[in-house]
Length: 447
Image (cartoon, rainbow, N blue to C red; front, side, top):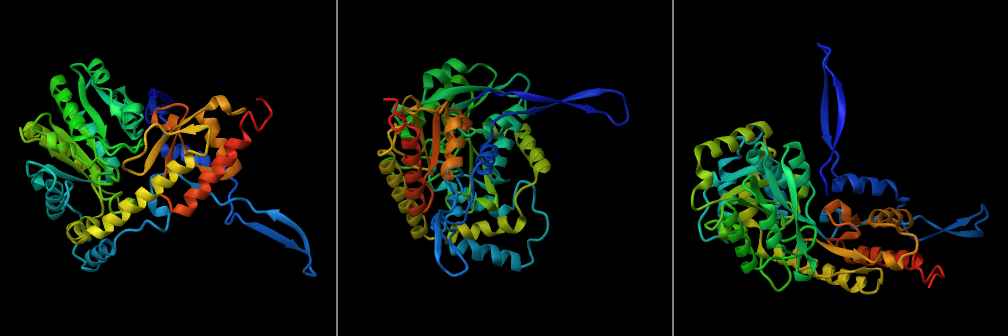
């Protein structure tokens, strides 16, 4: 994905100087999903509708427009089978009703919230975090924006995975950070191409971004591979930004290993949130955490830079922050197991159904997160030019939304989110199968 800009001419009110305003034109997931949704023919039901005359006699049987099924956005709460734990709702209601949290919180976050997250993350780390290592953000997206903003400097560059999460490139464009992409290798479980990382890096590289569990690929990295990434960062004298918003949402053979385990090898900025594991993306409760036993991030100037940037941004609502300690402490393991089991089930459905569709293939079965990357075989489709064309025609004809791979950096692939209720997922993939059959050369007599 190249970072381009759109220049807009701005006239100053009290002067005759014209000034160019540069607006990045990066593709965003929400932007393209909005366009796809607008391209559907929406309906409330997908069953047949009987049309009758005044006497009650059946005149004609018409097909209602199909209900839209979106497998494009990583928001499982759109489906009734995914819902937050009762303790989370109770904790928020309790803090709100207390009238103690209606004022401003410290811009770095409430002390008790920072400590609760430090203790929570420390469960899986060799070195215990303290509250001062944690900065509360408005979701993981603000954590990304904060991380890139505090690291940015003139002439800097950042190494991003391809495919990856496009918000990184968008934030980099606003901060005038050059983006350099390294490939993830599909046939090796979407592992990082470390040779490419070494070839891309230079003295101006501010960070390597690692997303684990993977979005958009559904991969989970092994302990050994994460250690190799940390050792590469050390060799290149840079840091790792570890995006762990899907942390612990794993259902394959490999366990989730936080990148902070290797903070003694290379400094790690860990980004995360309550959004995915607790199924509350709309609460916008995220964090930026410094995993750095050797003290690189303890530099007073660096700490002051983070704090001042937090002063600009603010954070989540105070009463949401205040609920976090109870949410973390009281959520029972059975809730997490239920979510994992459901994701394992729906990922299995997704993979089995995809085997029935000749024009798509999945090089690596998902092991975590909520999505999977699928390769299009355009050679057997008669009138589909690329992944964008595929997704827009699918939305128009079948009212099914999937994300074109171009949005995450991989042309002629698609991302399918399987965090959906099983019946909707099966229906959507059935429609996708019909779509592919209808547009195949064989169906159109070209074989």
